[in-house]
Image 1: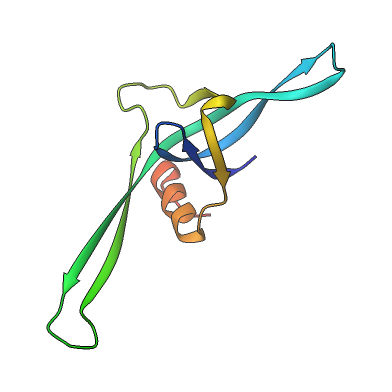
Image 2 (image 1 turned 180 degrees about the vertical axis):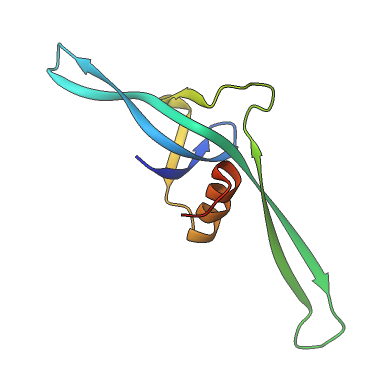
Length: 110
C-alpha cells in the first residue's frame, strides 16, 4: 500500500504507511488479507475552532487544526500490526495531511 488514513473501530483515525498482511488460504486456494502492517502510525487529531464575529453576513467562521501524535507513545517499535476486523475503512489522505505526516516522520517532504 502506501500512506493511508485508517479509521479504526475505536473511532481513532490513524495515518501510516500501511501494507496488507496476506495469508494463503489453502482450502480455498486463494490469498486473503488478515491484517495490516503499519509503519510509524500516528493518530490524526482534529480540533475545530469557531470564531464569533459581529458582522451580520458572517455570524461565525471556523478553522480546523490538525495535529499528529504517535499512536502508541510508549513503544520504540516502528512497525505495528492490526487485525483486519478492527479496520472500518481505509482512505487516501489529503495531500496537505500526507505532507505533514511525511515531514513529521522523515524530517522532510517528498
